[in-house]
Every structure is written in structure tokens, then in C-alpha cells.
Image (tube, rainbow, N blue to C red; front, side):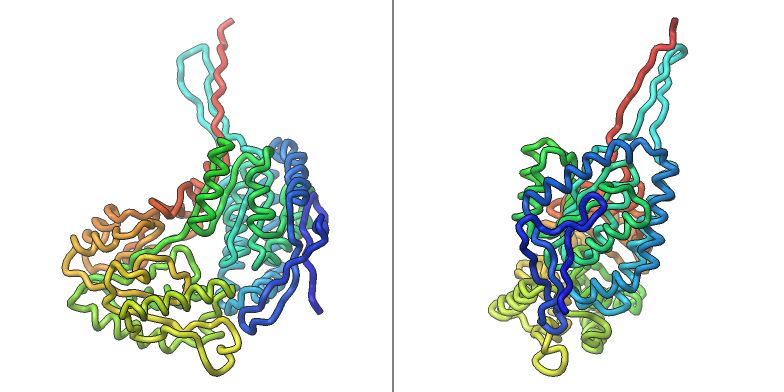
Length: 474
């Protein structure tokens, strides 16, 4: 029996104003799944009105009180983790380990920002005796969070937790392709104690719900994760309205391996890039740059490991039909350009995986930097490799992209690793597997967007600085 998921507005389930519901798809079988409300401008207006009405009281609450309520939301995510994972599995096909990782991290966002919120404050400015001057960090008001289909719950929580912590209220607009977990999260948050209207969720397409949300006059900040074309559109809308944005728009990130690196760990990192969420991660390091003397060895080891990955066990399907076709188009274009994969390069044509949107994990070796597969974000389990002669060429190849989201460097010479890290144009660089976590700011250079999520920096994204100066002289 098909389940229908309504909007969550003002602390209650709300049917779509137009009465229309959009079907989702189970990418493991290509069978229709649940249906979600097809939001439109009237739904958006109702949600923003609810958020605007709730915001002043939410912002006036002491930080300690908001902190406690965010901890309650984290509790609710953990208590209902299996349900949230089931909702995500039904429309993404993710494997259990991936689902568990993302759901645990979703709760951790609320825990982290509930904690650091209590140390989030302004400062005093010494202007001499007889004067008190200080700054306050105040919320914007209503924040619109427009999130993508690849990590629905996780990326919603990444934006919602800091925005709510500062005292904003939020209208979340998940992708119409994977909306169920975000809609359920909004309900759980209300049940956990968030006041009605503090967190609202409206599902629907970008055209019918996303754009009306971004242009709504009561929305004072927009956060968006997704494609460059949509990011440009929303940035234009925001510029017209003179409101700030946080944009995370993807990448074509380098993984640089020197001959003196720990090759076992470097190979494992490359394989993880292919397997983690089937490569459908903006920060995936899908350009494997390897020092020429060990290039063939590394490629051989990566390809051997990649071919052992099992569909439905080690990695899931491509989540949407459109993205599946896009990956296949990349394969066709690569073939036309004369690129032959070391492994993969096609969908599954037999067995259970052939029923779904599964693509064989793919490695293209020794790729020309000018090829489309070397320059465009494929968003699938596809790795391209390029050899380099020395540090200077490694740096040039690493920066030869319009993106700049993340990078990774593996080298037995830590000083060389740090030299490259400081010269690669990317918002995050991991050297020899250095951890990039909730505490580390995340965001891009160049076409990967602007603004920062995660870490303390995210709190400052959602807060405005006000200066107050008082003369104490009688």
C-alpha cells in the first residue's frame, strides 16, 4: 500500500494546496514508492508565515533552552533511526552501512550545535572608561534550506541544526525525489519539543516550491546544496533581493598520491571514493593523480579492489533515473573519445542488480585532463586517473578544474603534503587521511560555491553581528 507524506507546517501535517502528490521511485527495483505532497506557492506561503510567526519567541529563548531542545531532537533521531533509515532506503536504495553512518551523523549535528551554541556570543570592545560597547550575534529570521536528493536527512540536518541553534526558524524544501525522511524529521522535531512553526518542511519541485521559497519576502537567508545551474539561479534570486546565501555546488576533487605514500591506505581511500554512496557525494575525490613511477601499480590495485565491490552490499544504485542516464551518457561520450575503462563502464545486465539503477564501479586510467570525464562531476561510481612527474605537475593537475570543494594528498613526506595542501584551491584538504568531520568547516572555492557549513563557522553563517555602544557618562 502506498503511503502519502504531507507537508509539515506550523506543527501539523498539511495536505498540498493543489491536492497533487508526486511519486517516488525505489532505485533498487525501479518500482514506484511512496508519494509526497507536491508543494506550490500557497504551501510555501503558509510555511513561511508559520516560521515568521514562531521566530521572535524562538529567538528570545535563552541559548541554554534552545540547546536543550536541540538535544531532544537528536534524541528523537536516535530513537527513530530505524524508521528514518527505512524511509531513506525506500527512495535511495542505500546500503545499511551508509544509512547508519548518515543517520548517526544527522543526530550528531544537533548534538554538536546544541553544545557549541552555549559558547556562541559576541564580544566587548574597549573604547575607554565611560563607554560600554559590545556586539550581539542575532538571527536573520526565517531561513530557507533547499536540500538535494543524494544525502536527504544528513544534509538537511547539516543546515537545520546551526540555523535553529542561532534562533532562526526554518522552512526546509527537500528534493521531491527523496523527501520522506526530511518530512518525518520535521514532525519528530515538533514532537520532541520544538515549538510549532520553528521547523517546517514543504516538499515539491524546485520550480514549484523551491523558487517561491527563495523569493518569498519574509525569507532572509537561503542555504542550497545542489547543481551549479540551480545554484546560479538561486544566487540571482538572492542577489535581486539582497539576501545572503550559502551555496555548496559540487566538485571534481583530486586525490594526489606520491610514490612514497602509504599505498595501502591511499588505495583504500580511492576505493572508498567509488563505494561511498556510490560516488554520489559532492566531496568525492574522483580524480586520482598518481606519481608516474607507481601509477600503474596503484591503478591495478584500485581496479582489482573496485571489481570486488558487490552491488546491494558494498554500494547502492544510482538514486534517480535522470542521474543514471547521465552516468551512462558519460560512458558513451568517453567511448566516443577513445577512452577505454580498466573496469566497469556499463550498467549491470544480469542478476538482481540489472533490475535497478546499478552501475558497475568504473576506473578510467591515464585519462587526458581535457576529456569530459576528467572535468565534469559525474556523480557516480567513476574514478579517473592521471600520472604526474613531480610536485609541480601534481599541483597543476590538482588545480586544473573549475571546482574547489575538497582535496586529498598522500605522501611519505609530511612537509610536502602540507605544501600542497596550502596551495591547492579547495575549501578542505586532507593530508594522509586527516579527518574531516562535523567540527571542520566545509565549503568550496571557485565554482563549488561559497559560505561554510559544519564547525563553528556555520553558526556565523546564520547569525548577524549587531554593535551596541552606550555612553555611561552622566
